[in-house]
Amino acid sequence: MTEKTVVLYPSLGVGHLNPMAQLAKAILRHGGVAVTIAVVDPPEKHAVLAAALVRLAAVSPSITVHLLPIPPCASKQYSHPIVPILDALRTANPALRAFLASRVPAVDALVVDMFCTDALDVAAELAIPAYFFYPSAAGDLAVYLQIPDLCGAGPSSLKDMGKAALNFAGVPAVRALDMPDTMQDWESDLGSVRLRQLARMPEAAGILVNSFEWLESRALKALRDGHCLPGRSTPKIYCVGPLVDGGDAEGNGERHTCLEWMDRQPRQSVVFLCFGSLGAFSAAQLKETARGLERSGHRFLWAVRSRSSREEQNSREPDLQALLPDGFLERTRGRGLVLKNWAPQTQVLRHEAVGAFVTHCGWNSVLEAVMSGVPMICWPLYAEQRLNKVHVVEEMKVGVVMEGYDEELVTADEVEAKGTAGDGVGGRGEAQGEDGDGEGNSCRCHQRWRVVSRRTW
Image 1 (cartoon, rainbow, N blue to C red):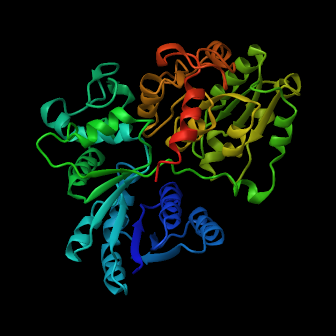
Image 2: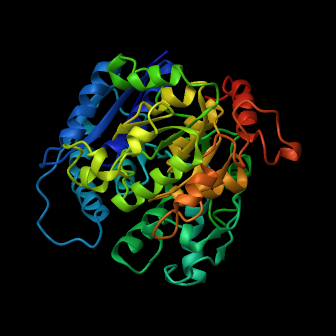
């Protein structure tokens, strides 16, 4: 049987490379396929991206990586940091075309992420079937595909609509303020670019979604039934999830010391707070969170990232004594553990001591929590996380909201109220809630996951 050749083409940045790497591993597990990831190599070298490529080569030597060189982009002012990324991707098209055309045997499929819509022209020119890979929720995809129609029939901006409800097929009503920043103003430079990208997604041969049937059945049905693209042909929708890091490589194979601390805690007693690689807070918010955790009296594991350390590309660890209330670390010693910047999230969520997860609702974090049977307390920060919060709380019913996430400050009172392993969510491992509502839903997700995981691709 002739081996097929698939090329994956992510946008710039580690946040786009990592999901594509997980997809590549999933494809390779099926056998009979050679996978290459084509990565744009910008003139300004990025140490984080370089390190990620080294890790990928070490962990997955069967995945080939090809760098696409691009010339320096003209220096100019951009209205949003995503716009120069899109310019760089357009500049990479000639290098992508040359690479695809030179492949022997010929490429059988090109898989791009949703920021790489210009690559559709290259694929069409070379008669290569092109697919989109959407690494987030099927519910997000359902909403995004309906945005061009909403824009044509309604307001040009959502910025002043606040809590007004927007109705989309396949998902609960979404407040305007919970739409991503990139979708708030469709007449801005970025908004118009995003609209053009979304309008081109139906041109693909199919869309691969990082989800699975049971978790998002309503959104997937709306997509496949054509309700999200009325009047247009909907590409085939393929569930390829859950694609998440197995956690084996976290900490370079060494067991993190926080896991030894977790070993000493009672089952389901620890509230785990972790907000992703970009989830940073002001000093005022960190102090408010600390006061709430202290007053709650509950055990906690908290990965702290300050805005100053993030802005310095994590070259400096946060000064916990300066960022947190005086004496906080001493007063909570034993029942609380604070980590600087990073925690081995996958391993922590799988630990039996965890009872609840305070999360920014990045989609990978949501999937890891569901797979581990851990209920979520949703504190969304940026990008599509507010939209994911809607799915987690109102559709999947495996989490509650940290009230005040859309205000200037989440109060210590709210952190205290929600900072327990079972407040309003149902503890890990509890009995299934009645009528699929309330307590035990995340546990039920985990139990059902054990069954459906064998049937997902």
